[in-house]
Image (cartoon, rainbow, N blue to C red; front, side, top):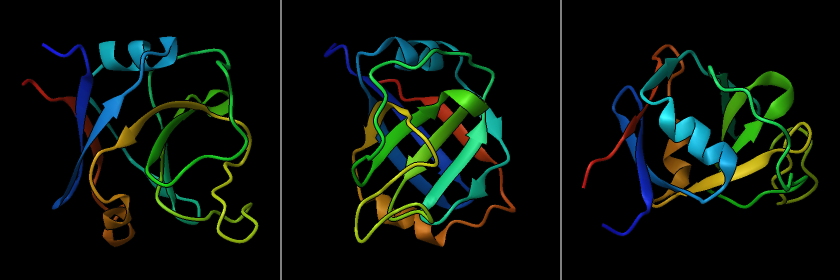
Length: 127
C-alpha cells in the first residue's frame, strides 16, 4: 500500500480520479467520505459545501490546473480546472485563499463538460 489517498469524483457521466496530499485538511475530508452534494460553477471551478470544518492550512491565493482545494470560509470543496472570475490571464485564482488538498490525476478539463443538474459524488478508491 503506497499510503496515497485516492478518491473518485463523479458528476453524472464524468469521472476523475484524484490523489489527496498529506495535509490535515485532506485527512479530515478523506475520513468523511463518501460525500454527495450539489455543486456550483464559478468560472472554471466547481465548488460545494461539505460536512468538514478545517482551519486555513498553508493557504494559497493562486492554485494550479487540476488542484483540489478546501475553502475555509464556506467549508467548501473546490475543483480547479481553469481560470475563475478573479483570475488575471491564465492564472487560477480562488475567491480567497484555499488549502490545497490534492490534485486530479487525469485531465481536469473534463469538468468543463459537467452538468451541475447532477450531484457531485466523492468517494474513496480502494486499490
